Length: 102
Image (tube, rainbow, N blue to C red; front, side, top):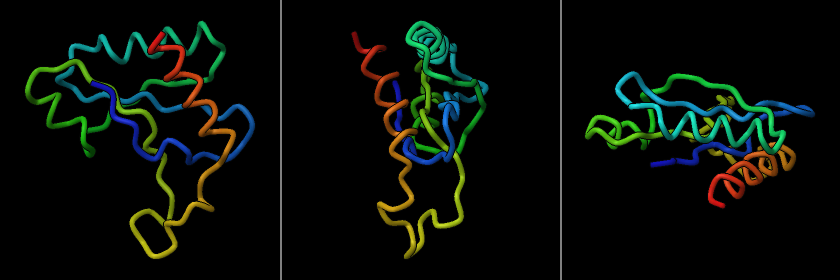
């Protein structure tokens, strides 16, 4: 199970795509995404996170990964508008997912 969340947040050229999982996941989804990222030259890094939609699936035994999760001040506020999306980061995440799905 792959959960995209806050995938367009991240400022800067070459900013890595967070590929997170929690401590219970078998890790297959995360490893596959990180391997794909390396193959298609998308900067990515592994991280641990238990605070999003993937967590329920992980607790049920699924191999999971959460893409994104970079914190920002406007999250879930009235200022959480499309302007917070960094097109380059969204593009990196999109390229990673598209290559992984192939």
